[in-house]
Length: 343
Image (cartoon, rainbow, N blue to C red; front, side, top):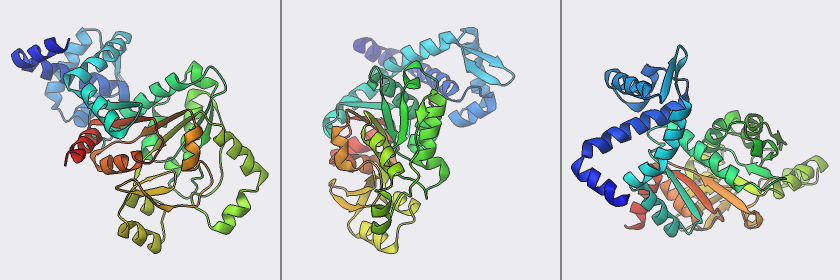
């Protein structure tokens, strides 16, 4: 197949371009359906005239249908898109990039979605869809407890959640406290959204993201807090993001002293309340209730979801220390990490 693709690239380069464009159209319709033509054209940065001819072709092929509310994929369109995804990874060398990144970061699996979430926010949704597919594969037969962190990327994972027989039996819990952040990015909100969409159950942890030593020691002994912490520590699957250090410090409204410390010690990454420098060393830790970094080694399945060129350094730094086994990222981050490793 690889040889055939190389021949096509040389003799029929236009065919590859057309295939890539139609793949992008189908993929975006799946993410945003029902969607109108003008909205689709704007998001794909295509002229309405060009998109009109593509939509007509896809409709004639029975891959989409058009309603008053917008365009949707047909069952045949969904099936074809699923088959195309592996093929497109070969065409655009994403499969090779996944293997290279897996070896570089020392991970069990890496999944790269096309695009750059810094430029196209909808790429986060595609990462979310990929993550959910992986979550289903990692689940045990029964008794699953899924812990999730906060952040905009994990919020996108929650947005892409759909009802599922396997996930219906799962219990969703926040991996750590999160009161104090924007509501939509809090672990509690994301946890509840995932559970509701999957038709599963959930428990919430009503504590701030960062605490004073006195507040921490007081809350940790509360029976209701202990109960939810036992559930969190029993999780067999954790889904988490990886943040840029400066962005996370601002989001937490960190003190001037902490911000200066992160700046002076050149922090580049944050996850689970830990801040890392470029070498992957922990340079600061937020006192927080929930999963601690050292506790992750006992959890069977850990999926990190993070993308965008701006997150490349953060991902690479965290992976030098963090125990994540699977990374879901995008083309923008993957290319930047591989480029940085060769400098």
